[in-house]
Figure 1 (spheres, rainbow, N blue to C red):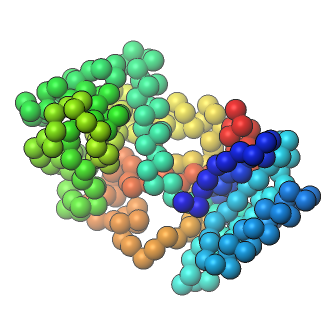
Figure 2 (cartoon, rainbow, N blue to C red):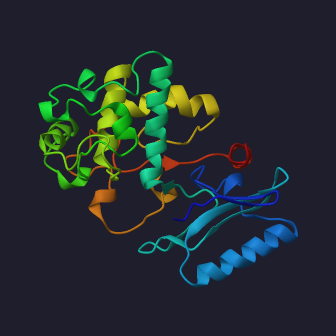
Length: 265
């Protein structure tokens, strides 16, 4: 992962997950004091061995390092800046889980509800699967990837998942599954009567100041987005996924001092 968080004394290191496009003040690298110089030296060395990323380091509430390292797009020769936006892959699951808890607080559902109360056409063999089972990866539903069903729209993809036999009894064992969280995404949409990302924006991102966190609702200039590999599955316009409520990963961004403050709480 290019994004990590650790704490040594009062030193907090967190990934800077991108900000404004173009050459703005936020794009300018900051290296301040002995702490900033020390961490910059480390990542400059790591850059020479292939590390790409954007790093934010703060100490005592003061930013001592904000800088990009390595290439974000090897083909075009574009380097990471302090504000390059990175995909966060499965870290978006924490947003989905939070959305479920927000809806529970609003009285729209309970985590102990069977999923059949909120999803249509749930087969009888999955009648005992609860929202909690999906949240805790203990539903018994197998692990299927969205991009393995390129010809299906999102709802049809979920129907295909539910048609598969269970791999274990609900609650019997832990088995990590990506598609369980896709089912949760749909539950969020149905229970909230809103699009998934819009619900997160209104109920989570906006209230806590995550102004540039999202997938489609943020207007991401191409030059700001970190490129991982030549893989169509990372493309938001990948066939069959264009109208999905969320597709593979969110991209996150947050202004430096706010990010550090959030990390320290």
